[in-house]
Structures are given as C-alpha cells and as structure tokens.
Amino acid sequence: MGKQSYWVGFDLGGTKMMATVFDAKFKKLAFSRKKTKGNLGVESGLNRMITAIDAALEQAGISRDQVGGIGVGCPGPLNIDRGIILEAPNLGWSNVPVKQTLKKSFKCPVVIANDVDAGTYGEYQFGVAKGARCVLGVFPGTGVGGACIYEGNIFRGKVGSCMEIGHFPVDPRGVIAGPGRAGTLESMTSRLAIAAQAAQAVYRGQAPALQKLAGTDLTNIRSGTLATAIAQGDTIIEEIVRHSAHLLGISVSGVINLLAPDVLVLGGGLIEALGPIYIDELTKTVQAEALPSYAAAVKIRAAKLGDDAGCMGAAALAATAKL
Image (cartoon, rainbow, N blue to C red):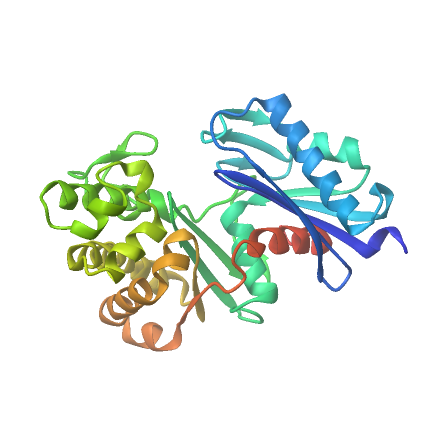
C-alpha cells in the first residue's frame, strides 16, 4: 500500500511512552509501550522512542517507508514549530530535538504537540467531543493540564502550547508546587495534592481502609487506591476528592465564561478512577459558578478514548497538520 496509508501516534507520558500505528481510517493496528519512570537520558530516551515505533510497525507488518507521518504528544513547554521539547522535568530533558531526530530516522513528516492538546484533539476527532465548535479539555492527574480546540484548530501561542490551567494562581497563601509558585490550581487539586491530604487523614486515624491499602506513603496513594478506599467506606477520602473537584470547578467556570465551550472534556488518571464522584461535584460547581447561559450550554463529558486519546490525537495532527 502507499506511503500515506499509515500514521503513527506517539504519547510521551510521565511514566510510560507508547507508539501506536493507525491505518488511513485511524483504525488501531498495533502498539508498543515502554516505561520512562525516572530520569531518562536524552540519547537513550530518543533511542527508546525510535525502538518503540519500530516495534509497533513490526507488529503491524508495516515498513518505515509506508509511514505517512508521525505525531508526538509531549509533556512540558515546547517549541512546536521547531519540534523541540524545551523542558520535560519528569524525564530530566531540556532542548530535545524530537522532530529532527524522528524525521531523520523515519524519513517522513513529524509534528509535536502538548500531550493534553493531543489528547483533547483525539477526543475532538474520535471521541466525546466529535464535531464540537469549541472544546475545553481539562486533565487532572499528577498535574493539571488544559487544552482548547476551536473550530478544529488547537488554541496555541506563537511557538508553543497554552491553556496551562494548572498554573492558574488561586491562593498566594497556598502550598508551593511545580516551578516554585505558591497556591496554583495544580498545587491544590492535582492527585499529589489529594494524596497529601489523604495521607494526613490516615495519620489522624480517619481513613482506616486507606491505612491498610497504602498507609501514609504518597507513592502508594494512586487514583485507583483512592477509589478503592472510598468503596471500602472511607468517607473522608470522598470528601477530599469532592473538595478538590469543587476547587477545580471554580477555576474551570472562569474559563467557561471566557470561551463559552460547547463541550468540556475531563480526562486523566483521576477521572478514569474517580469519574462519577469527581464529575458530579465539578458539574455542580460549574452550574453554580459559571454564567447561567454558558453553564446550561456546556456538556461535561468524561474522555472515552483512555490511553488511546493522546496517540490518536497526535496521529490525526500529523495527518491534518492542525497545529
């Protein structure tokens, strides 16, 4: 088949990287996943990306010269036009020429995008926001990421992504997180923030189920662990999760007032594990805090593509060059 028949989407996540091969109709043909946990050297990391793509192509029975393009969803600040990751703290990377490296290896067009932009674009093209005029994506997890798709295009800055809702200043008296700024939305509503409050509840003897599941070790208090603790009767953990969703909902309401989106897509680890509780509380907050006409118009939906969202969105970006 021709060179334009296949597309590769790559998701360079916080603890894993995944390469997925799609056909011309974006049917998933094969994928390869590799761990990235911990500081990953630039050279070894880029080589691992190439290896993952080759492994996915081999599984799909497709040669390099049949690939029409590669799209990569990347964490951290980017220079999208030059295809450079300016900084990816979770990988220990800075000024990494992803586009140039992959283009040299695979001899095809390569585009990069913010990982939340790619995930939201995937939901716009193939998921719960298909065909919407204005899509707001908010992904609470280890951090809090945001994205906007407006009339089919990713809302972005001159050379990089924007919509960094997690870095909204909320309370200057709040805790310090991320790049040293106090009281950001991320410092107050991320999974790490929830885990810290949950650990305190365990220490105070208020969360016996979580005590048995994880104790006070933040590395063990994951989204799924929180969901299990709630199911086993830890009402204080549900209160903590709902309070976090409420705080996020207040800031999201402000963004809704600015953009008047017709769809709000919620994704990420917290939503996958705690969706019904989290979305219920956030929806109540939006209904109370956003302008009534905008609150009535927006549809609040959980992302449905899961781990495929970033890869599908990145591949579609490579195919349509919607950057």
